[in-house]
Amino acid sequence: MRRLFWVSLLLAIPTSLIWVANLPYPVVRQTMTEKAPILLLPSYIKIESHYKSAIAALEQADRLIENPTSAADIDLGGQKLQEAQKHLDALPIWLASSRYEYRYWGYGWQFSYAGWNSARARAGRLEAKVFQERNAQTQLSEANAALNQAKQQYAQAATPIDKPIAIAAWRSALDQYPQIPTSTLAGRTARQTYEASLRDFRETVGLAADNQRVATIIAGAREFGRQAAILGQNPPHPAEKWQQIAQLWEDAIRPLNQIRPDDPLGYAEAQKLMAEYKVNLAQIELRRSAEVNSVRAFERAQSEINALLARPNSTNPNYTISQLQSIINQLEKVQNGTTPYLEAQRLLLSAKAKLNEFQR
Image 1: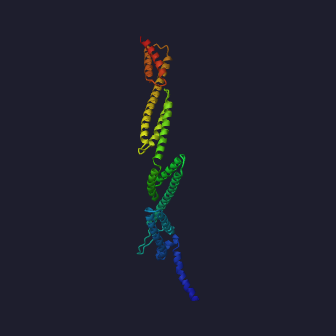
Image 2: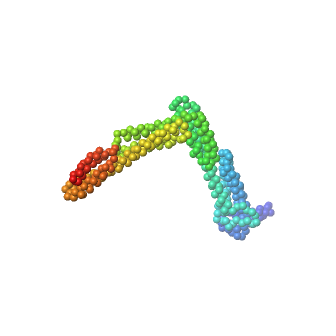
Image 3: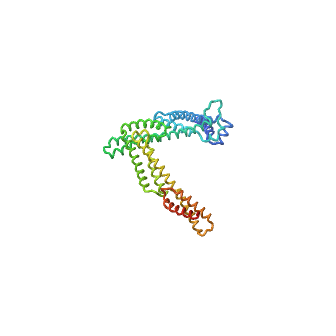
């Protein structure tokens, strides 16, 4: 019994010493590194094992995540990434402040402080990639569900009211596919699905949907044009009103740009209307510019008339003649078809008559 006790004690002492030496305390480990580094071998073996396992799992995760062929590859890559992260987390944090401890003793250790940091950064990048891929997969699933529902809705639509609603839902579902990032597996799948589904949409719905859309756009543009024409009746108008009319013509032109050249029936009509509306817009801009310039010239003439009337007893006929000539010049700048034109003509006749009196 006593012999068994002493044998156990003799075995426990070195075991305890090795256990204490491998505790994650910088003071203890630094001393062991300097005096008896061989005692730290269990720690280094554990570190090496976790590091090798982490690198191996990262390599597998990288291949699966960066070059996936299916959603299952993304899921498996995510599992491998979790496994690698588990091994990286098992590496003791004191390694960050104990780089000098790691010794080779002639053995080809794979662990290195730089490699550890690189592996952690790589794991973070892959984790972000998995997150992006899974988000894209969710978007793809939602788009597929919306597309299937819209197609079913169109198939069940039996009234003229239900058809446009179903077509709009189908279009809305198709619009979701281009929004999925093409850098992801789901994005590449979405692009193929979108192209095939778009062909299916055109073949199933035919030109009716496109024609209806084009007809709606053209009808809206015509309404803006009609309002602009009504507002422009019975000129002249102030510059502010000409600006409102110009805005209506711009509102009529803008939606016509949405009609693409591949719309066989509506494109020619849209181009014809656009050319007509642009001519009208240019004319309105000229009318507005003429109104602004004419009002400015008329106001200057009025200001000069007031200045001349303020000196009724001027003894300098040359000054009066000069002022009258300046007034005439300003009034002659007022263009026909503007709001001050008639009044400007009346003042112009009066100014010319007064000038003739002084020149006799």
